[in-house]
Length: 355
Length: 106
Image 1 (spheres, rainbow over the protein chains, first blue to last red):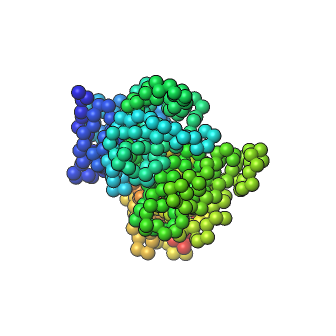
Image 2 (image 1 turned 180 degrees about the vertical axis):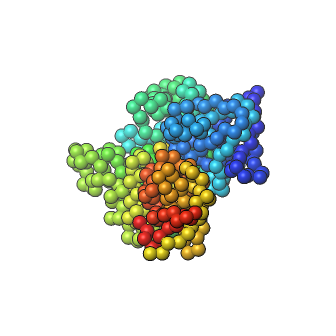
Image 3 (image 1 turned 90 degrees about the horizontal axis):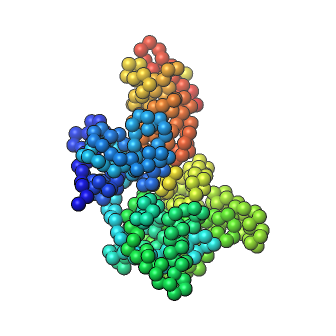
C-alpha cells in the first residue's frame, strides 16, 4: 500500500486555522490538495509557470525536477520549491498561496485510459480520442496530464471535446520532433494501420490521464461575446469552448476564432468541422511566414494573429471575453495588445500560462 | 505642489515594504531600498493582489499572485503576465515622514 502523509497548509504567517490534507507518496503536494478540494495556487502543473511555489516549513520532500524553469535560481537559494514537482517523504507543513479562484469545480482524478483513434487535423496536429471507464467530467477549456509508465513523464494536453457520460476524451496533439509522448501516441496509431491490432492493444489501459486542471475554462455565466485566439495545438481547448458556447442558449452572439499558423498547412478547416455539429462561428485564420503563404497559394491575411484582432471585431474590445491558447510569444503579444491598446481588463482575458 | 505624508519612516523595514492608506488615493506600496524610499500603487495592474505581500529583490517587487515583477523605482512592468506599469509617485523624506507629491506623478 502506498504510504500516505499528512500535510498542514499555512496560507499566511497569521493563519489561525491552517487547512490539512493527505498526500500519497506517489502524488504531488499540489495535485493531492486539489483532489481534496483545496484552492491551491497553480496554473501549468508541469514546472513552468511558478504559480505553485511554496516554502517547506517542516518535513521532507523529493523534488522530481530540481531544474524546473518555474523558479529563478535566487528563489531556489531561498528554499522555494514547486508544489507541482514535489512529493512528500514524511508529514509536512508547507506555506503556499491559496484562493477561491483555484478551488476546483470538478476535483481532479487519475484514470486508466486506452487510446482508441486518431484523426489528422493539420499536417502535424491530430485529434486523439481516449476512453476511460468513468464519465469524462471537465469544464470546456481545461486540460489533462497524460502519462505512460514507460516514459515516466507527464504532458499537459487540453480537451477538445465536451464533457460526456461515455468517458471519451479528445486531445489535439502536435507531433513534436523528439517529443517522447507525442511520438508514442502518433506511432501507436500509425503502426496499427492496416490491420495490426497489436499496437493499438499496446496502449490499452496503459495510459493514465489525471484530469481536469486549468483556469482558462469557459465562464458560462458571462454572456459577453466570445473571442478565441490561438495557434498550434492551442486549438484544442478553443474547440471545446466553441462547442460549449454552441450548445449554450445564454450565448446569443456568434463566437469568433482568430487562429494563426506558420503556413496554410497549419490552418485546420474549423468552420466545416463545427458546421457538421450545427455550430457556427466567425473564423479568421492568418499565416505568419510569407514564403509558406505564397507556396501554398494562400489568399488570406499574412502576419501575426495579434495584429489582426482589431480588423475583425466591431465592438470596443472591452465588450468581449477573450480565451487564448497557443505558443507563449503569441499569448504574450496578444495580452499586451488587448490590455494596452484595447483597454481590456485582465479579468476578461483567460489563458493558462505554460511558460 | 502638494506634499502629503503617507507614513513614517519607521513603518517601512529596510529592504521591505509597507502598505499605506491615504484618503483620496489608491492603496500605496512604500519601499525602503538602499538608495531611498520609493512609492508605487499597491494593487497589481494585472490582478488585484497587494504588492506589499510580494517579495523584494534587486530593486524589483514580485506580485504574489502571478509572479509578475515590477521595477520599484519606475513602476515599469518587467515580466509577463503584467503588461501595464504601476503608477509611481516621487517620494521625499522630511524629518521622520515619507512624503509624496501626488500632483507631480510620473
